Length: 451
Image 1 (tube, rainbow, N blue to C red):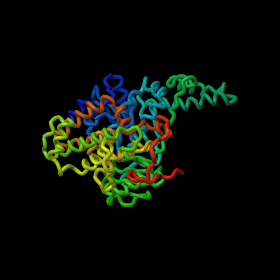
Image 2: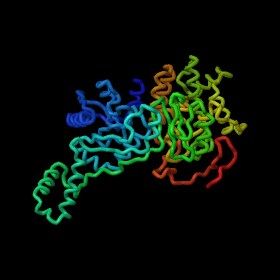
Image 3: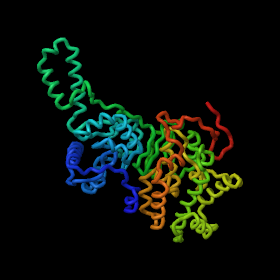
Image 4: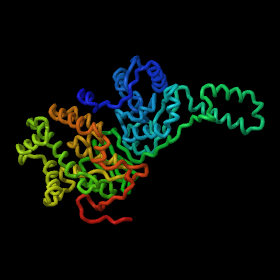
């Protein structure tokens, strides 16, 4: 993993904590949440305040995430909003934390200027010993305050001020006035600078969780389903209409089709489909060469083409399916009938635009793990786990590729691969209407009727 860290592909954008004042604030918050403290004088934290260095020191990398549920957080600065979330157990956690910070940025900036803000992503489930408990998670509430309770005391002071203004005899209530003065010393003038946090409740009908081998839950769609990447039989019954295992490729494909969640890359608006397909083919060749011990040099396209020639009829089916599709795109070749049984099927798709785009792309990345670029962008937890198992030649190629081809323009790469970022309403961020036909299935030719 050292290579990934040196290239900024792992633990990148963490916030450094190296001043005695910030370390002490962090320790106060840490003790408030967990009863623990750190002896380190400098370390790095993610968006939630988790530090991998502290995880090593404490021997517990879930010290802010007990039971992998109801993640706690420590905010020392609003700069944390741009940091990643490490050891994620739910796909919604970073999005919720970032939105909470952005929508309360002025208030949090003021609060963190004098103290740490500590809190929790709270739901009604406190432990997930049984898989069915996951379906009890429907909304998350962000509970936060400083270690000195500035938010709670500001709310209390606001209530006392309202009493002072409305109760007829409040002017003569010395106890009330003394209490207001004492609270104001801690909170400041809440009439001019109110301390109130907004946007603390978030609906979470759809999410991925790392629990039980990985499960994708889709409940906001017309045909709800859970897709299980681990042992489906071991989970037992789940309170949702459909439950599919990763091996049920046809059922997953049908689920994506019926809910309009995926589209073929070759018909996606604005996509350089030929370039995307060719790059996916390169990744597959790198995997094949590394697995067979073939020399691929620096992994240039010319060298990989030589690998393909050496493999001949032994080329992976994923490669052959994408090659057939590329011939159709570039050379007016015969249209390949690739169905969900073909190993290349999920490599040919990307998520449609909308609020579920990132979750669907995460699912597609797990179903097409040889596309290492999509895996890194959409499912870093799985990327790091698989990276540790790859041969050295593949690790070197992937790290160099991501450093040179992705790191220099992350936003541009994401837009080229997946389209414009969805807006808050779930549509295309450009506001434009889609200009391609909606197909019944990714490889069908029948138009889907509009309702």
